[in-house]
Length: 427
Ligand code: C2E
Ligand code: MG
Ligand code: MG
Image 1 (spheres, rainbow, N blue to C red):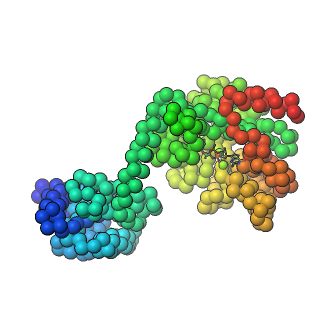
Image 2 (image 1 turned 90 degrees about the horizontal axis):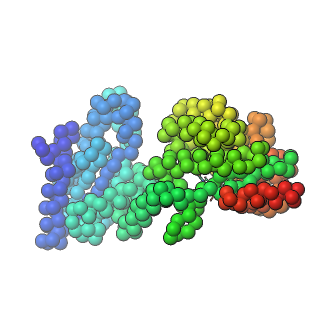
Image 3 (image 1 turned 30 degrees about the vertical axis):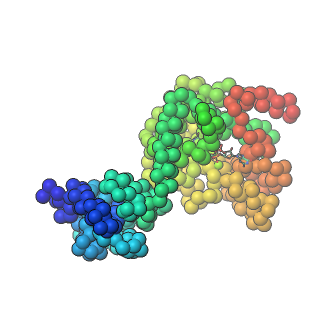
């Protein structure tokens, strides 16, 4: 019993280990290859959370039955975690049979289940490691199958991946980046650069967007595109984002009164509950008025936990903070998001501006968004304006504000004041 999972009756991790070491012994003795397939259920947790554990348990039993139905008697199926299963495929002659099994698993588990009157659909991600190619000892095989599984999940779940050596290298690079980022935060290696925004009607600079940079001791200046995604994934964006908000408020206090500051806030920050408190505290300790702070969110923020997110947005709005929809037009259903919250500003994604002078329908899209903004009472900012030709078109199409290299690249906080002074003398 100590080697069996009580719920499904399948071998547990302990028995799997035994079978695996037997298989590896056979491999050594007579060259009989084997394969390890790590199966992780997709979307199981929501079933468990919303319908309750008894239904979750019943579903797991059905999954176990399906697994049993698709392997040979010489193979081992084990349950090694809540929704994690392992299949040890014995006597593997070629990788094709393992691939066929992996494909079968994804297909079979992904078919609909009927559990106590509920129609349920879950999926499976599968990571595969082969012995001897990917390792001839148990730990290495399990580790490599896990790396392959991680890849399968990154690639959108509901699929299988075979281990490849560069997965290991990539994972190590990721770990190093994570470590570096934690250190970077402690050692104050992050900086904010500011990109001015021009109001077309008044021809005045009315604010700046804060854009983070990482000044890495060995790698030099790192773009946010290269570390923000990982920071979001591992939750480190919360302390980093908190620093951004506080620093941006402090910096904006040194600017002319009519200039506001915009910070980018990512989905993970909305999930963390602390966002509103952080903003209140940053405004209070810097002395910046809430009207001068703007948060930029992307559709990703509205994609999940919609109710709670909207509540947070309304709380920010009550404080007097403005809210912009960033990268507009690149997501899925921008229009319905515009209806779900009264944004102050729409930032039209740079990709549309780029097409403006090259594609015939480029203008029509910008004109439509500008018109939409106008009738909804929202400002429309054209992002990534690089040429005066683009600028001219944008004026014609009715956008209210412009941000882009034509006005200025993002500039280090220390250089911003002299830039603003120069502008004044030009105008
Ligand atoms: P974003 O919020 O859409 O910011 C605009 C990006 O476009 C910036 O890239 C800016 O440098 C770039 N850009 C502006 N004008 C032009 C132009 O005329 N031509 C070209 N080619 N590019 C232009 P950057 O600074 O690399 O930032 C990339 C993204 O990283 C930002 O996109 C934002 O999503 C994210 N990000 C930056 N700082 C933060 C931050 O503090 N927190 C979070 N969560 N995300 C940040
Ligand atoms: Mg932005
Ligand atoms: Mg943008």
